[in-house]
Amino acid sequence: MMKARRHGQSGARPWVAALAAGAALCAAGRAPAQDLGDAVAPYVVVNGREIPESLTGAPGDPARGLTLFLDATRTGCTACHVARAASSVPAGGYGTGGSAPRTPDGRDPAPLDGVAARLSPGEIRLWIVDPAAVDPSSAMPAYYLPGQRKGVDDPLYNGPRLTAAQIEDLVAWLATLDAAP
Image 1 (tube, helix red, strand yellow):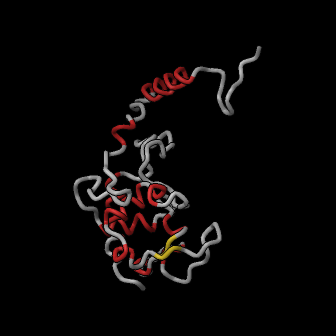
Image 2 (cartoon, helix red, strand yellow):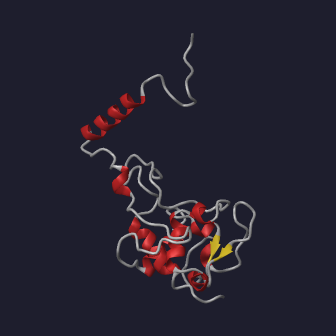
Image 3 (cartoon, one colour):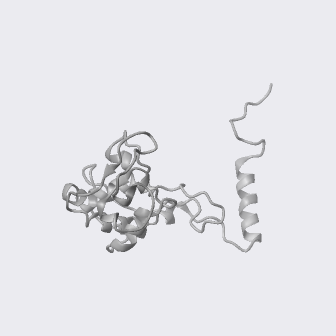
């Protein structure tokens, strides 16, 4: 009788592959991937609506948050969001506050102007960390879950897409957007 294999699974046992990968990294002078527990700081969601405490214990930097917002490779925020506060920054994409075309899935870009008047910093933080916790039908990706980074040369391999400090930088910038356009 033939044994069934899952799609994409080789005949080798998973622990053998993991052991070989770790040995290869050590031989190359690099430490194996960090423990997932170290990659994501613990946080508490209150009332299913917010993460009231900073992930780092300190406020973020709004200028770095704006840079992250405009970084199409790192965050991709401007693929679906616009903010007039970003319009003075010379960059491409939807987020520059000009006449934005539709998002890749055909919707109008979601405006972030006035977000700080509608949401607390804790609510903004939860939207960035895990949007599906707020709205299960949201198309927005989570940015702070383990296992999101897959580049072998990435020092945060298997960690979240953004670090806790980067999340706080985005929260700090978004918290400055308290006026509608």
